[in-house]
Image 1 (spheres, rainbow, N blue to C red):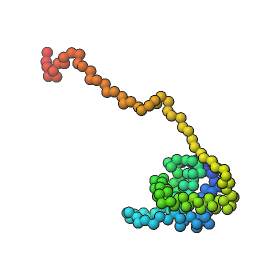
Image 2: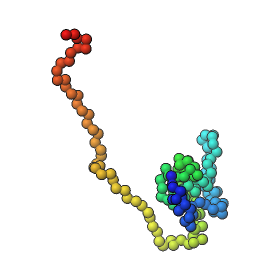
Image 3: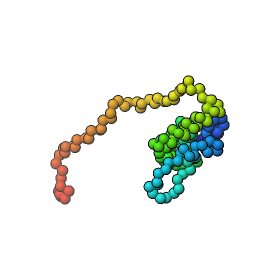
Length: 151
């Protein structure tokens, strides 16, 4: 989880961390997937909280396991994310967010950037790991006396 100090730094930045009401009015219809539910049970989780969770993940670069609980269980957020990607909802929603940003601040479409990371492999690992060989049975060195044998 994020520390309170980290969360305060996040909240202090002047950027999109959660969808404002005006933007949500445009996004909500795009994120609806019309498919019957396979099973009854709890009602579907709030799409706005899930979308805010995806923004949080994108902005922080954190792993799914670090997602704050206020956005919902990480498995639920991931399942909805996957469904939105498969149905093209996320692409449409992201286009609306970019359009909104372009109208307010402007986007320089000439300049693009990508972010990534490189992680060093653990030391001592060369190629596929070998299974340890089983030790052969130790041959007996002398005859054992019978358990019930008496002298």
